[in-house]
Image (cartoon, rainbow, N blue to C red; front, side, top):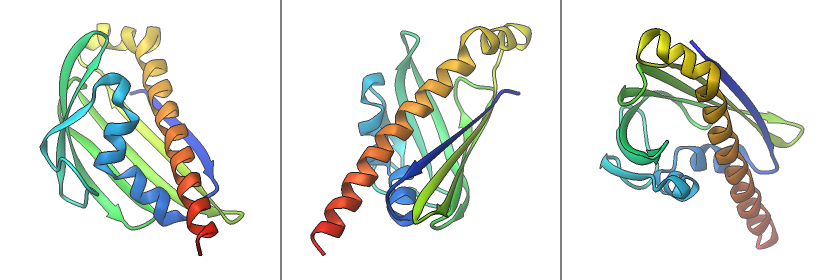
Length: 158
């Protein structure tokens, strides 16, 4: 089971980072290169414990749907989304938020199992793990930029 862990230090408060990470609207914006859109379940706003969303996106030239559900939630420090149905055999994505030196440390832990047995494992080694790492890293950098911009303007206007 491939595991990806990404740590991102953000000059913004916990709540801003936490809310952006669970925002359906920000997710759509940050994944626009993949034409990702919410097509069922919670399709806008902030997703909460027990809620689910079905995403439609284009990856590797193929339009796919993936449904995930929020299975754990401790505002503003932790939430988990897990795949209910989709291209993976399974995945679990933990979102952890900690205060570090008056900043927010956002930790993503993404565990996934590919379908297709040996062929899926081969795909992990050849390209899928790196693809998912790059996807999460890009999204985290967009979240960092958005959170820091929001935080800067909030402080400036207060």
